[in-house]
Length: 543
Image (cartoon, rainbow, N blue to C red; front, side, top):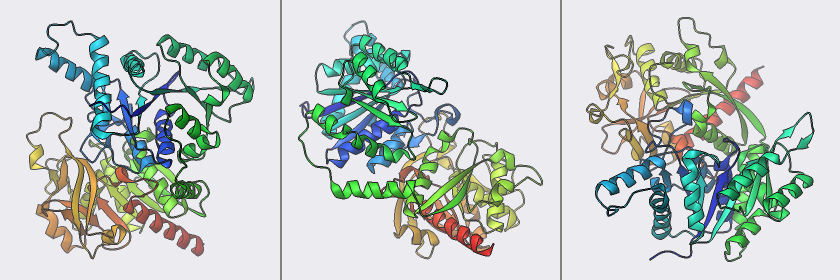
């Protein structure tokens, strides 16, 4: 039976990409969460990939992995970080999934000989999926982010489906737009937003709220123009100015009364916000905005020219910084720039901590190994994530265990010491999408390890996304030379965490950044930031 109680909020973006629909969607989710409403996000993406699993991070940013092994758009990371809740892959609806389903049904004869078309078959499939989530999960509000920009060919069918959805259910439309402010004129220009509104009206949608991305607070004259051309009251026009942190946006929306207006428009039962939850969020945001101290962390990676490739790592440092009451200044270091004999390591000399990140392919791996060696030999707190952990193993094997040329078989199939090797289950894999070791998996932590002290638990669950593993053939030899095996899978077959014998040096095969939230920071990142702060204090006192 259809859940008629579920309300819907649909967020559409006009004019240009990169305005922050994911942050706006997450802020709306957080507002409703403050008031105790059960909320869930849905994300529409028009690309014809089935999911994000095979996408190059240079083109699409990081691939975000959920507990259930789904590889989804990076906006899911923002949703989870705001809601402090793990989500599921069925909330990600892509063009690839839809067309695959439509084609499969047509081949099976389920359309009974009809000519299958965008309308009504594809739009009905979208509505069916949305309603299915409402039935199975029974949220008070489904908040739907339509990927892309109004006017894009690839998301037109999503917009039409949402128009049709509004004929059946209570739907509130929110349009995110851009208000440029030209320095030469000194005025906020509303004409582009008016054009975007006109395009939405042509699609049969009259937005209930207009959220304006600006560099500064929206002026009254700009609001009046937009209200006139957008057929809405001025109070329904909300500004989204540049803020010191994205986690401030829900609070900025509340200052403008957007929370009360949205709840009223949805026809939800009025109630007070949870004061404890709201105050806790304000306190954490305040420590992000105005921390009492600072430290510096270098992120060494393969895709640093596109910061979205490491969005979750960056945000995990923000969360850990809030927990440690410290600002974390990030230095982005391209790994390929650290390669070669006599590589210039000056980019790492002034930092208090180092993260060596994940990635695929040979490029930059020797630079990562050089960075890890530099950190270990100079006592710089270091965290190796996924590939970073694998190369931490190779570095230790080479430079401590005298295993010359030790490497991963991914990068050197002829190496005598393949300390990292392909999983047996991966050797026959031909398809690349959704075939790695993916999703949340438990591991058992050695109680005597530093990692156990950080987590405070014997068993932890972190998310994975990789094909290669620590080669058990070398477990004993590396351990004898001091490399600690800090955690293994429950069946004890796979190494999950390693530690250097001294100082803060931790490697994890998992991606702990994927489960880090402002309300619940990742323990390894908190440990790294605290160690970096201590190093910063020691260095300051010795000057």
